[in-house]
Amino acid sequence: MTFTIPIENGNEVKNAEADSQRTLYPYVTGTSVVAIKYKDGILMASDMGGSYGSTLRYKNIERMKAIGKHSLLGASGEISDFQEILRYLDELVLNDNMWDDGNSLGPKEVHNYLTRVMYNRRNKFNPLWNTLVLGGVKNGEKYLGMVSMIGVSFEDNHVATGFGNHLARPILRDEWREDLSFEDGVKLLEKCMRVLLYRDRSAINKLQIAKMTEEGVTVSEPYSLKTFWEFSAFTNPTVGAEGSW
Amino acid sequence: MDLNLDAPHSMGTTIIGVTYNGGVILGADSRTSTGMYVANRASDKITQLTDNVYVCRSGSAADSQVVSDYVRYFLHQHTIQLGQPATVKVSANLIRMLAYNNKNMLQTGLIVGGWDKYEGGKIYGIPLGGTVVEQPFAIGGSGSSYLYGFFDQAWKENMTKEEAEQLVVKAVSLAIARDGASGGVVRTVIINSEGVTRNFYPGDKLQLWHEELEPQNSLLDILNAAGPEPMAM
Image (cartoon, rainbow over all chains, first blue to last red; front, side):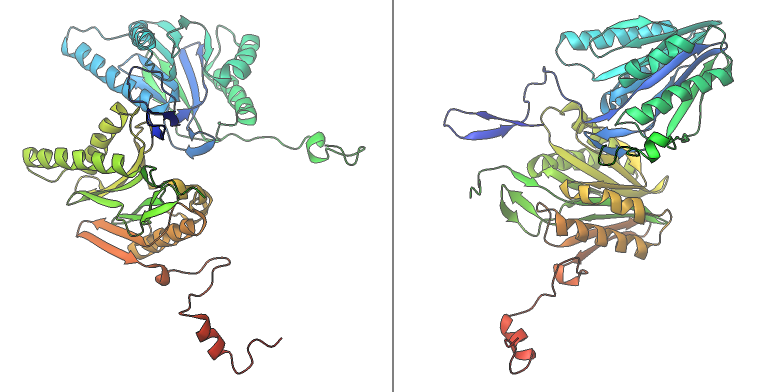
């Protein structure tokens, strides 16, 4: 994390980054977030882990938060930067409410704001080390978008961050439909989260699923998924070939 | 062997903060090292911020000291303006502010613990990067690597003050046994509605672990105690 640089008198000195205008490295990170549009709105899932390098250090971090009345923000990447983004959004929502004009920030506006923040930080070589998923429903219109730490931003019917891009999106491309019911949506997300649990080293078995509809946001209580290990190839891997692996 | 006496002072450290059914217990070892040399074998890593909030410091000794100093100063002013004791949450957030905004320069992990009348006993972990995480218990420092499994097994909610302190002392002692960067004595600080109590546990008051022997004054005592022909097989 720190690196040595030689100084004039020949002694090497350990020196952390003194210049704040430089690309950083993440310390406490969250892994994938997966989200889909469904019949009544948006469903989003993420686990509650905060990794510190390879250590699964924190197991109770909420990586999805409601923003205003119409949006849901999920984040992967550096948790301290996510906490800072929540502070920025708090201020944004506060100022929006202070106008007291009956209007309230919708998901499109929040997504746009986040895109500007992330892209401008990237341009200064001082990124917020997150990939954000922004979902919401306003006036019956469903919205689901993503912003990365380099400012890449887009909308889609289903999005995922990190490992989710490689493991969950192929499943979603195959099995997502326009009018998924809540139950089918949850089952689909759980299918994705289970694969991530099997195959992502930084995943933990404690997740939350959040639902965003016209009525508002609900984030579920934390829960765990059952996993299956009883394939005969797993229980007896070397049968018929003793000594192999 | 290069002792590297010019290396920055770092507290390898084991630090712990634990809530119990009336407040919090903070615990730490006492070793400050400069490279391979132990610069201070009896440091106090549990530092006071206010009457009711303390912080356990780990990582760079200098960084953690200067952050504590700033936050103590801010909290002092905040207490005057507020007219009542600062809350643990405010203390944690002030530390976060410094830790996050200077994340490029600081290398210190902190555990804030205290008691206030609104939330009772609370522990906040603030690792590198400036994330704030409220936890029922927190461990930090290089010695904490050896304690994740221990706490997964031994931690329970709503312990009594005595149980919680025993747990903290045992844990720091176990970490000292395996982490070269932790050592010395075990210090604890208990904070609850009644106030603050500091405790001190020197090595000889602690339980012996695997392959550790009872300390003796001299070999001569062993030889004399064992009888006339102790060296005969």
